Amino acid sequence: MSTTNHDTTRQVALITGASRGIGQALALGFADAGYDVIVTDLPQTETELRKTAEMIGLRDRKAWLYTLDVSKREQIDATVQRALADAGRIDVLVNNAGILKPSLLQDLDEKTWDAHFDVNVKGVLMMCQAIMPHMRTRRSGRVINIASIAGRQGVATQGHYAATKSAVITLTRVLAQEAGMDGVTVNAICPGIILTEMGRNNLGSEEAVRHWEEVAALKRLGKPEDIVGPALFFASEQSAFVTGQALNVCGGIYFH
Ligand code: NDP
Image 1 (cartoon, rainbow, N blue to C red):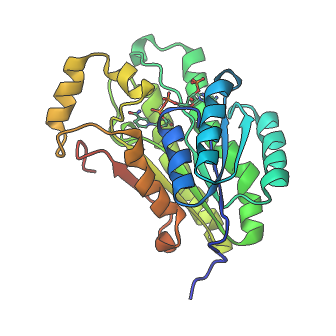
Image 2 (cartoon, rainbow, N blue to C red; image 1 turned 90 degrees about the vertical axis):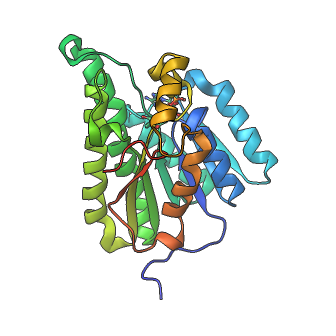
């Protein structure tokens, strides 16, 4: 018998940074799997975010959209309140929003360092602080944090970004320990190189794409949809005894 109240009727997933890339693939993947979906992203992405919501509607699932900067606590608190009033519940939180602006650590300015920690780390913490009490009261919930293999390995020109993703893995482990007694699991996904706007900008050239395709055990780089299956697993009852873990989803370019 399950120790949680994880029920399978009309579940609701909230996904940050859902207007494009991995976040959009997750929003559509959760809709395909039967979830109603709350999509959020920065105000300037509203047109694209609306398209994501429309695509969810075409799948006969409900969609709610809110513009939200995850680095702003007052926006998070107001948005979560509205989302809970509109959708009635949040079963799954996917902290996907993130930024990467490459720089050598030697040249890194404080503003860039702070911006990465504000969005990639504080954003994850504040979203969890806003939504996990609701999950803990219901004794049911799943949190999925999108980290990165950069957070395990460290990558030249991404030291600040890698440090944020290491922090996300640690937050995942601690939040899991602090919320497990209330039936909430917290896990992380560490994508490898995924061919989104961020992934392509980061690689910079077709030559680099080909190099990493050759390095990968599966001889290809990732599509945003490659993250959907692992996320649905962490969201599902099948992962009821899995918490505080970080799963590499990288096609075999990194093995630790
Ligand atoms: P994209 O840059 O394609 O999408 C990220 C989304 O997050 C954008 O819509 C962006 O909005 C939004 N965003 C940025 N800042 C904020 C903020 N302050 N508040 C709310 N939303 C924000 O990235 P990916 O889809 O590639 O990445 C998604 C996640 O996966 C990130 O956490 C990333 O670090 C991680 N990841 C990605 C990898 C890859 O190779 N692509 C590899 C490993 C991890 P806007 O368009 O306005 O900037």
